[in-house]
Image 1 (cartoon, rainbow, N blue to C red):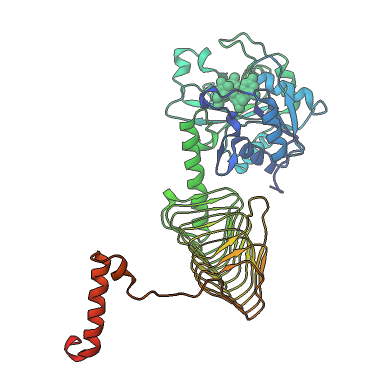
Image 2: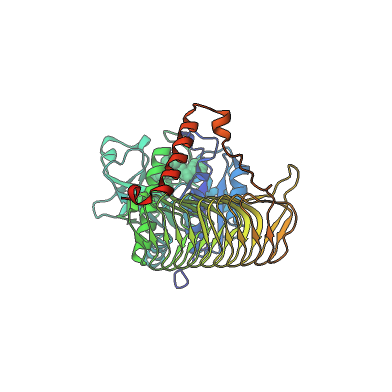
Length: 490
Ligand code: UD1
Ligand code: MG
């Protein structure tokens, strides 16, 4: 927004309670698209690059303030007092920003998450270009119930706003609603707010009253009507939260498709706001991309995959996988049914196959952990093949220990590495080995006792059993086959 007009201040109202959420979490901390509602509001506000940014809090003050400061450390937290109403909320913010006497003040809500920086910027531009004292963002809706109605004169100019609870029958029939988002001239706003009372159906100090006061003073008051109603919609309960979340997602998914991402099923694909996708990424149904996930060119993700804060390299394939805080190298293959926990790093063209769990492990290029195992607190070199069912036994019940496996290693099925342990480059392990001691480079580690076959044990110990019958038939077949091979072999 560098060429736009920067307002002197944006005030985000967030003192309300939000009882209809029926939640122990304050309403504006509920999340859609991987970000809290107030986080969305603050980001849109911050994109205007205002000189000052303030948020007004009251309900669950400490929790909300901590979250807001975490999201935007430069913000001014303003506490609303016992006087209720949006007008009072703005008044306390202006008291806190005492040097704010001229320029444009934008007011938005913490529970209107789809409002974009672009629309807010258009509102500010129009406000400044028209030289207004107040410019309110409005929308024409099918059902205006609950909203303040925009009163216009016969010539179409804005007379003021009437709250639902104070409106007459005729006024209730008006379907142009107040979004609650405004641009004001700072000086006119200060003057008008000082004259707003609380003589209304709710006994509140209404911000909406300043428009009528300004109009009566002969100031310019104008309304900018948006046709994109989602952008002015607030979430008061979980039904609205879900609807807003779905719409936000639809917008994000559409944006990525336009950027060259193939999405087989947009309805079942959920992408957080901070996710980054390259061209020719393919997303299959049931894919959730969350947090700071990034996916490289030509990679295929899904179906049924959740990636949180995970980076996927170019041309990689990630199928039916749950991964958090991991890095998957270019050309690598993960899944189906893989569980990559924090700090899994898989090298280029590597593989973590079916039913593998990994955590805090660095795996070199072209190394394969193909099936059924656990690798944690480990480092594995390049071009190594980890056999089926291998496990790094990293936890001794008290502490975690590391397993280090070199490059060009081949491990037999069901090898267990009892950490701390190191396996040198080019070493082998036998199937079922329990590796407690370091294995030198190029050595073969075997820990199992030699196999002993007790011939005829089943016939002797389990006579007449199904196993004994099968064994007897097998021995006959073997002797028949060896004596008359051509007859049996057809
Ligand atoms: C308000 C508007 C109404 C508009 C509607 C749009 C007023 C008087 N009415 O009504 O015209 O159509 O928003 O959604 O402004 N808040 C505070 N402190 C308060 C009261 C509210 O910070 O004392 C904050 C809330 O947290 C919320 C916003 O202001 O973010 C709006 O409050 P809400 O109670 O929802 O206002 P409405 O009565 O819906
Ligand atoms: Mg409301």
